[in-house]
Image 1: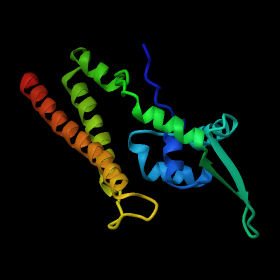
Image 2: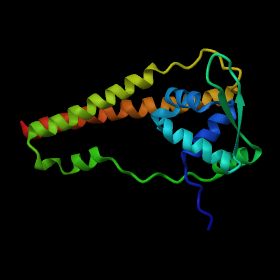
Image 3: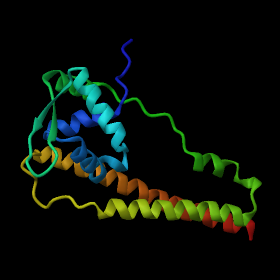
Image 4: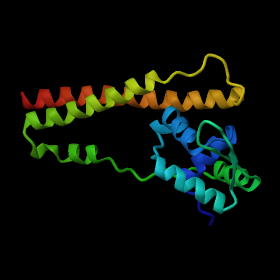
Length: 186
């Protein structure tokens, strides 16, 4: 049996580099402005992963000399890197293990006071509302950028729409759960 290739930051980076060559600094900005609502990475992880991609022959790096600023190190996927990305894209997606500390707390929250349960739910609601606001603040360009196909644009928008829909659904669920707690503890 062939096991699916696990998702890793390297696949996310290869995907972004397949759109256009980028420096590590610019890549971090792009991640923060695009996929960070479903895949997070800090600057040091990005630079380590870029170095590993180059070492593994999956990306190349070339330096653009700049006079008034530090040199720019652009990375782009090699043919092997694009093949790795395509292999990963074609593999069936294995669902990630579910690990949500909030839901574990909620599962055992009957040990808490009613006020403690309310605080637990309200805190999660505030966090989720903040996440939703951040997602809704993401602006997709009105026209499809030159570096992206119309299909690529539509799929990127679909990923954003998924994050928004999930956050809205969670807010609705939290409100219903809070009402249940109120009914049962009044």
